[in-house]
Amino acid sequence: MLLISEKAKDKVEELKQKDKLGDDYFVRVSVIGGGCSGLSYDMKFDNVSHPDDEVFEDKGMKLVTDKKSVLYLFGTTLDFSDGLNGTGFQFINPNASRTCSCGESFAI
Image: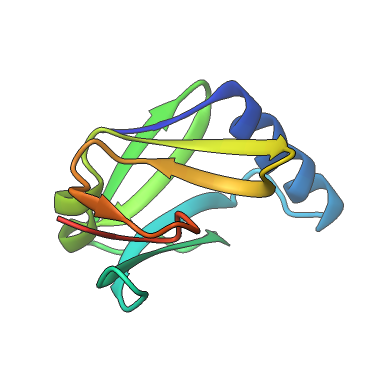
């Protein structure tokens, strides 16, 4: 399961409106090799589903990932921070054994 916080959902909807993206667009989240901890998160808008996609819906928001990435992301919550420590999307991943200080890469 892949989850999204209210704050992240609101920011995603704001960005979709700003970019004039229709309701057929969803958030695609994946894990790619790289970063100082070995694995990095990738997130983008997409409107094309693939046969091997895993589709989750939380708070009315469609979140899609590929079958390989779901192994790393299961139980992860996509959050958004706009505090003093930085602004941006964050992944709260219970599977990560180690994360880098910037929060953009992790290890399992």
